[in-house]
Length: 482
Image (cartoon, rainbow, N blue to C red; front, side):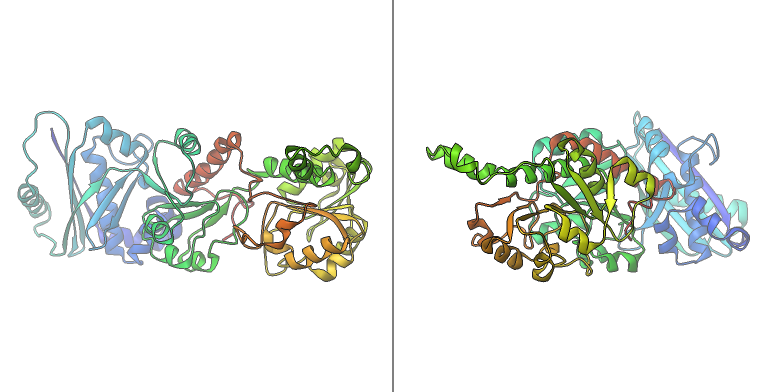
């Protein structure tokens, strides 16, 4: 089976559409990347228009419209040598699969006021070999017969019947990868990193239409050198390792999975509170050494009941902590640069206080702010000195928010009762980090969100944003950071 689709577009037609409808016309017909590589040239846009129509005809699904393909299910982009590549998605991709397309070719021309595209597809079943010379001559004959001339500008390439490429920079174990692949929509092809080696990370990142990262950094060079890149998405909430300036320069949106990890991180924060108050790691280690410290710990350990828990930051995680900790009969206060509405405060039994009052009144300060210039080392020596004697610091946000030297000094002096740290100024910390020496410190390796039964939910969250972008829909405000 050999099928062919040919279409001719007057360049002036595209120019008129641009003049009348401008961005609405571009958004309906072309992907953002197609618009970018066309650089406003009406001849380039017309050639892409013609190619989309020719593909529709070759696949036998009719012209674009309610019964045909969406314009943006066919994407026409140049390869590194300027040859046209046509990417098929959605209905176009499914139709090509049904036809068993094994070999395709495309010819684009634009000159003399015309943009011409011819697509030849060879499907499964008895066929003759695809002869490029034959279809080139067919194109010339067809155009000459209909228009009396053959445009001089001519490029040949091929169709890529392939999936959207997702470069996942995380070296996850096989079970996590299995869940992600099971949940990801079929139009996406996910490739995972095998290590955090910078060279491997770079090579993987620049291949993707989408970059998905959790712990791994996304530097400027990766963003700048990824020709197909459409979005960078964080698996989680913290985006301090993504070069936002580089993404903005290229117009690449950067999103986080706002709220997707909030529940497990909130549970972890409360677990750290309990572990610090009851010295769980210390008594566990002691018991394994044969020490029975039941009476010794009576004068050391504390309960949560009756304590004041201060939430430094009231985003998704802070709100989840407030909701979950209510059963421990605690008093919850909070400070955030944006005060919550009255209904939220009432539903979560929260009291808003100033930053200084939060430090002075809290038995436990639980940190839930992003790492910004304004929050770096926010809990420094001066601010720790304002805290209650015997207070506790819990940090499940970013290590740089807490000055670790000041924290160490306050713990050694007895100013603070203890600390629970899931995040660290340097990750992983140096083996000789002095905080390792202190039994009143409970540490975990940034695992607050690391639970297997939340992987599917985060995957759905991330890939729904990928699909929104491809459909041209608005991206969630709460997720977008650039």
